[in-house]
Length: 459
Image (cartoon, rainbow, N blue to C red; front, side, top):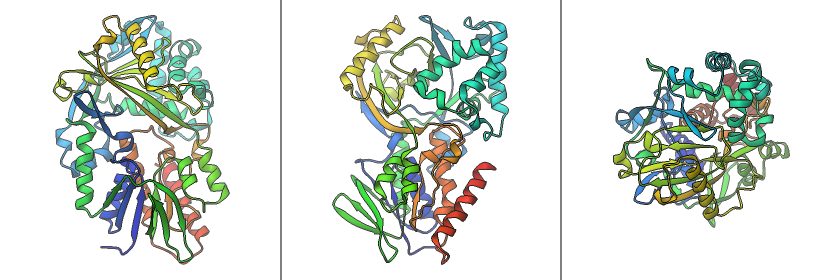
């Protein structure tokens, strides 16, 4: 059933694209506004040498039901390629495979008792279903309790520092629970090996198909549309100042990171803006390297030795070489907080430092093997899972009638990935599509937010 209401969606990442599609399918007239000259956000693709592939590393799991529902709508799900991958750890200058149970038993960095406690920790976390208690426990405290002090200091602590910096100390145990839940889902095959999927053509192909599907569904997509202000007039209409124009909507969903949403919406209350501005984000600086040949054949190499990057992701260990013109493709992500000294360094300095460190790590690799390198920088990637984070996450409904906030800071019991992003969009729809009511806005807002909290907590 067609609605006469015009719905604006601010942000053209996978979150905004999914929202726009589902709103159009529910009969709204939808316009999507994206500041960049193309859609995709964190899932977009770029040109690296003679290869077009994802700007950041992504994989699909068989259990990614929300993403795969979208892919089925695009007639792409049957084309997913499923690959068993290998994982390694780098410690004391050596690479140790850690993919199979046999690898685990031979892993020399931990004694038998420590291995048993580590296995218990992972198994226990994979079976837990109630994350609410975990978000009240400091991450380090929980890991020491289950894995032991030696395993924590030898294994967990270097990984946490690489991923979160000093922020690991104010992170809750729900963070590691969500991480293990996600990774364990990739090992639900008979031999417990990691099985990941990718679409030939990468996200460039997915986004092109999704954009065409949106346009067939009647969604107007405006790229290069940088929003500077959103406000509501006395007649109840919402206005968006965008690239020198002033557009008018009945409802608007803002999918930008929380601090940016606060700056775009001056009519939010001081308490609402403060809540958005206080969300602490982890960002990423991620060089992509196109190589003459594969690196080591491990999709993920976790680092226990000091390095300027968080880990080594060898995409060419997963993706068929025909997708990469026979080259190797490696990501060197570094997760960083807002005040990290890496931000002001130039791309050239980052490339030189990271490539030199990679050469020290892999004796068979030389800087001359690099055919092309580009550096991606994103300041707001995921919200830090601090203690009792679910009580700090911003609600979807705001004090401004018709203005909604939907962003990754509302993922309170999962890790940021494409499937979770699509799920967040679909979970938000009941609030966004709620019919207009005559009761006071505050009462409506309180009710829908209470319903949302009950839904999340009883998931």
